[in-house]
Amino acid sequence: MDEKILEVMRQALEDNSVNAKTSRSDCANWDSLHQLTLAVALEEAFGISIEPEDIARMKSFQDVREIICSNTR
Picture 1 (cartoon, rainbow, N blue to C red):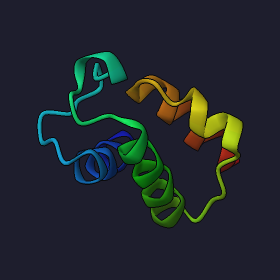
Picture 2 (picture 1 turned 90 degrees about the vertical axis):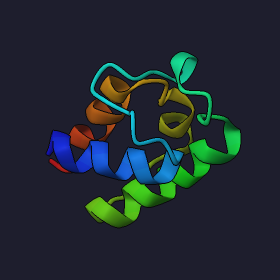
Picture 3 (picture 1 turned 135 degrees about the horizontal axis):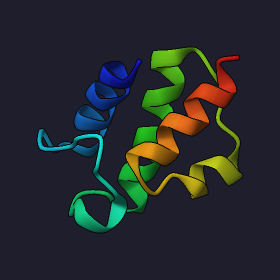
């Protein structure tokens, strides 16, 4: 699952250097527009719906992973 999340993040954030340690503070492309693009891409890739408060909470790979895991149970 981690690799699929990373793949979606790399595409949505347009940054091939995204890895498991990536956070919003160290990814120049991770702005508000890319945040929404990421949320939509994750919803499509995993067949889930992400709540607005969870979208706002996505600030790192780890956050994204936790949100995906909690929505796919």
